[in-house]
Image (cartoon, rainbow, N blue to C red; front, side):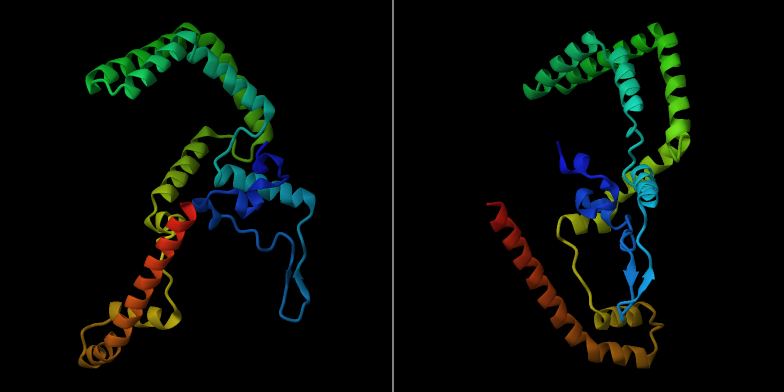
Length: 233
């Protein structure tokens, strides 16, 4: 069993969530917060509150709406109806075709056959699938914070946006460069510049220092890449 499945509140442990989601899970206050004098200013959450927050993040950030065993069971039943033995065999054939690198035309034809077979199954067992979907809707209403499937679509969309975010991609691939306060102020002055003589002079005076720091950061980045490669080897 994975560590995530063993954890009581997996969504509240950043180490058990993928890097693209970590910044969107705020749990610094879960175990309470103390000020600089050691005085408690926010009490720790109790189990009921932790359970609620865990479910909130599971649904809105992790996009897991199947943590209830009944939902998992019904989803499997629905999938077994739509993807019967015929579809499973066709998928195996498709995988074999892709491994053998057959023509794109033949692969597309097989994908179309699979699509049509699944559609036929949906039409043939429409009543059974309708009953399953109604049962799923009732259970979602009972156990989920967000039972509406339209809400699910929005959360899936946000998750896809996080996965495509340049910042997140750079961070999880260790390509994100840090910037200190002085560099930030310099960049801010430059970006807000209206090309006045005074601002141009300030930028010219600080440019050399800025470029040298940029070279330092570039060297640090290359060193980090070498270290990561060495660890993988």
